[in-house]
Image 1: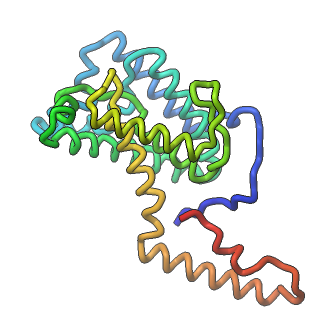
Image 2: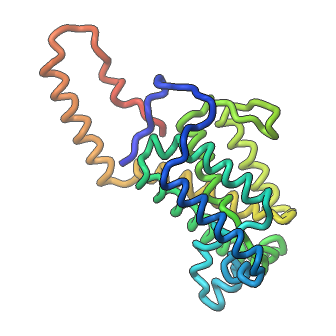
Image 3: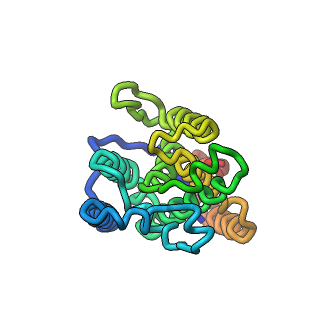
Length: 249
């Protein structure tokens, strides 16, 4: 089960650091499919997420492939920039395997929630049912949420001008996406998918705590650590027992 790092350990550097092999692969796949759909536009409705095609024709591959299709140079540029900015540090914290798992679970989960949302008997939902949803934004929003949970007070520059703590930034964009989804103001952006990414990312990160076997493993590991500490703590002044319980809930 994944644990959040201590809030007392922090670092600062210009930029998130080098691009890992996993990030290069993700960015490269996005660029390749962007070029493919640019030169062959007929691929977009086949690879993008079309909820009606998923439910009626069982185009289930769209739940994954939509993440690699983008609608323009600025669309893919901002998504890949965000993937590098937030993904690089999270991958260093989690490890590549967990990072990739979180990325794809969040992206696919956001697509599933989008399809479910499109089936609601409301006008704003039916618009999504027949639309083409493209972009990695569902997974990107999940990464942004994870970044805010791990580094809540790190500044994020909204519109590249206003510095806002990461936790406040996520609350603002979450509220915007919720209102946009309900109001039906799509503007070419799949707000329901963005919101779905936030929801799935949050549930994924919190789900380990709700899993009984994972919690038992954590308690057992904590007990073993405390036993080892007692053998070597021959004088007072060490860490308090509560230090081992500092995690984000």
